[in-house]
Image 1 (tube, rainbow, N blue to C red):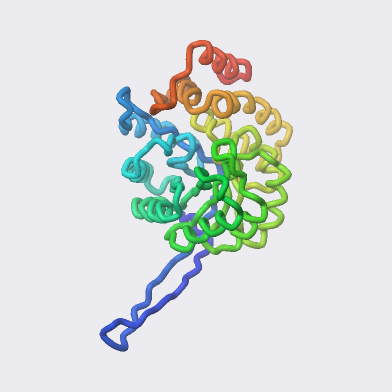
Image 2 (cartoon, rainbow, N blue to C red; image 1 turned 90 degrees about the vertical axis):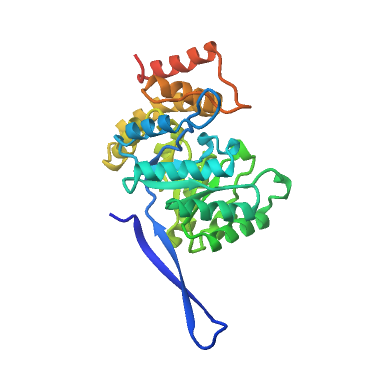
Length: 327
């Protein structure tokens, strides 16, 4: 079944130098149903920090048994900032090859410059990505005012052959996309949604209300606030914890949809501490350790990220145990 709900065809034309013949170029801008749960998949490395593609394929086989809507490839948990452009594209190509049309594949295509983001988004589309998740450029954060960000995302969306999803992750970028920027960009036909990792539920609820006429979809960026995000109108989540506790994250989604609010609330409570342990507190190194306990390959991080010590590993394990996810 196609994920496409609506397609708007923009026709442009130009007269060929040879005379009166017209050549019509079709540009399709699609609105996808992006509702559901996605893990921003971790990138597995070998001991020499090369990408362990065999381990990635094995992880995907196990994730495919969970009712995820799809996968985000090259999100923050994928260590995309430490990969070369060629590695980023090749990784996406492999995921599409192994997953096919079974899941909706979203590519993290954000780069620091608008020009590079346009290029990376095109390359991700060429190898099969169905949408692009574009993080805020942040190195020159003093210059990333509302005008600069609107200009950046508009240029990317104008040229992208696939729909664009805004990505606000202030914990990593120190830039929180302002509501007025998001509302303005939601009017663009090729900007279909937002992944927000800030955790301000009031902001998320107000954005759902302010953008509803634009068919704009908002995804929670953390398992710590998935339940309240659904309650204010978000349609799903891109959740680092889903790399480890994917079934539990999907169970929370289903409980909410079934109206089992008390059960959903209790499960949400149990997910908060494990999520904080493998995101905010210990980050990707902690996430990769926890993956090993649930049958996935975590492996090393790429330098300069460092592995965590045994005392920290013990803390994470105790958090998972005390919340009923490990014996």
